[in-house]
Image 1 (spheres, rainbow, N blue to C red):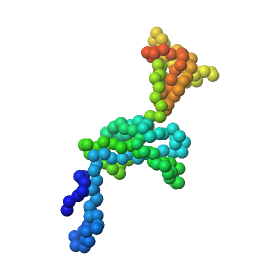
Image 2: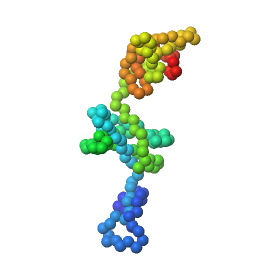
Image 3: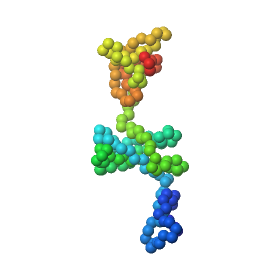
Image 4: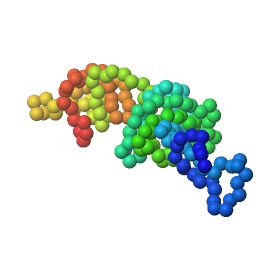
Length: 172
């Protein structure tokens, strides 16, 4: 039996004794040198995700990681989840990515150069001010800070800290 494409047999559609007319597909062959990673994009993020956006794809165990970009956005939503599919095509020369297994995807929606940032866990409220505890001569002091942009892990500091200042990042 000859295949019109190169690839790996991923499914057998025939059993011993099966009559064949010649019109059936008896094997499913797939070229796994590139695979798709599909992600659900929920309604609240639909306007922010675009084709061409960079994405970092990681296996759930964290052992495999690669960078790519969103190559496709489904024009139709899923009624039950109220989401659409965003797809990235991953190169798979070493066959590390296995179709059907879950992956994590981080899509970069915006990037900006930030001069000073602290971990979100470093922020405290002192009276009615945002503060960070800094070290000065082996003593920790309160530094009033003006906040800028933030994400889940980092907060931009517009004023109140200088680049290189030591601060308490946790358990302050």
